[in-house]
Length: 247
Image 1 (cartoon, rainbow, N blue to C red):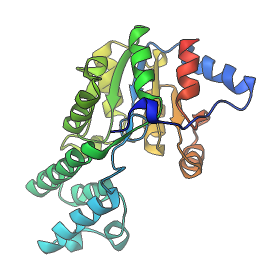
Image 2 (cartoon, helix red, strand yellow):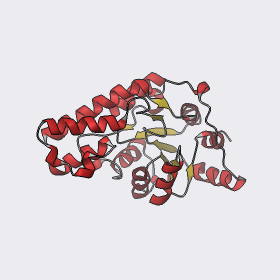
Image 3 (cartoon, helix red, strand yellow):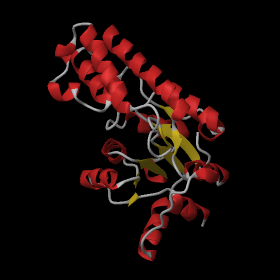
């Protein structure tokens, strides 16, 4: 894994107005809910998510179950699309359980080559030092999150508040289930929380839960998707977030 000292991506708000707006976003935060894959790391940086999705499709086809997927679902680059599609037709089945476990195993393999998001580690440690409560609210397996955090020495910053994918796949974001779990467990009102996420499903889950949202977009495509979903505050780097909390 790449250390923070090796990460060279830099970005700051374009104007003082943007910086002030960012400070306003974080002013009332007492608990920060993090999506995992994106804001904390690029889980599939060295273990292609597209390859994982293809593998799940091939596994289904090898069992004569290709009819469970539409053509667009078979061609999807997102393994969660495949998982949701099967769950929609076979909810609660052994098939869904086995497919979910196969995805978890692929995610676990991916942790070995996951790329830490620039400034994520120091931001997490800064928030902890400031006394904020932190939680993970993700569509990835909680076993995967725990493995990654342990490797980075960050477990104590989050534990026990890791809320991820279960076999109840209808609870995946954009459903706010994992966010609501985190709020209840930390005894936090939605207005005192802040969600940091990088996908439209993160934004929609936060909106449904009544939690203020800060989007992280490492490229223009991510930014357009977040803005298109309705997010109003999006940063290209966690550096200005770190500086705002330090300030």
